[in-house]
Length: 481
Image (cartoon, rainbow, N blue to C red):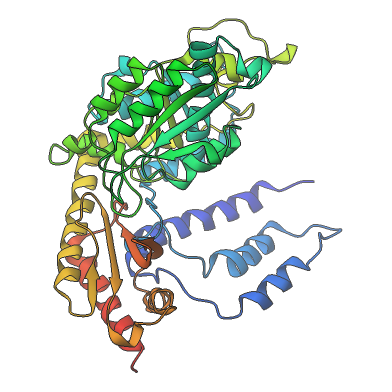
């Protein structure tokens, strides 16, 4: 197998040209191009076979670009409001390319050979700096593949801590030994429920104590009753999960200080799921929403959301790095034993034994834009959400379903032509069909709804709001056209 320098250079030059063209024209490109022949295209792709003899790199480039990328959604564009998807800053694009070019496995801290693990720790501390959280609040920190992996880590080390604190057992070594660990929360994100199942805690052991749909207020009396009963027995313990940034509204759980006090009193672990809500702390106008999140025993966030670095990049923080070592460092091959170092070995405190240098795009982006640059992105997105929410609230055929707390707008279509069971989904498809904006479906108060989350550094109020408004008007008219 041999790729000549000339072939590689030609391919990389094409990549660079595409990158430059996308940077210049991404706001003008279709957000998504709907394909009506997906079944046929999938069948054709899935029935293709591995070639016996390879082909020139330029031919592979053409094939992939035409069949995979040419009509791919422009998910890092300024009007892609689906899920909670950030863009990719130029600095992070360069960092991601360099991470691929050098292809380091950041599983071991080998300071005499590379400072990659040191850079990871520094980047994670810089995020704390950005969010006005003292670095010493979370001495344990690691990058993961995303918030789901980080929430899973949180559940796994939490169960270890509760097992030792409540029952004097080592769950990582001996299993649950007949004990049950409940998970108490309020409107937890699906990734938390998934993590509860993956960690073997049992999804049926999740208890929701919220008093409203966005998990703002909890029934703290109910929570204390559960914790008190557990303390008086010898078979149950609890992990408490607080959400900072409810997925439909961007709302935050209140009274974290009171929740923390109850956890301390009754030996429960407090985990904070702040996948995107962490960054409210970077804005003086919104910081109060995320007050006291540094009180968690562990905390989850994402960089590929509002920090606008490429997928995948999750953040995990904990006050108890020793629990990480007990859960993830128990079995190690002899060739991976490098002895004790100043920074814990990533493979001994995290899930993965093989880890990409995903810190590099994050580090380069943080250095390039700094705290002020990121604060401007966050504030701009929040302002855009408020303005879009105001417009929807005044529109006769649309209904705003919740106040805009952060950067997410929750609404539904109320026009009569769309008022039928499938109307919500069809309206979303009509919005996508304009190729001007992308939103996703959800459920609110038991009814279909629509959510739009602004997380992209490129989103501009003056340019993009009129285009989004036009897309919604076109979608409304498409039913009667």
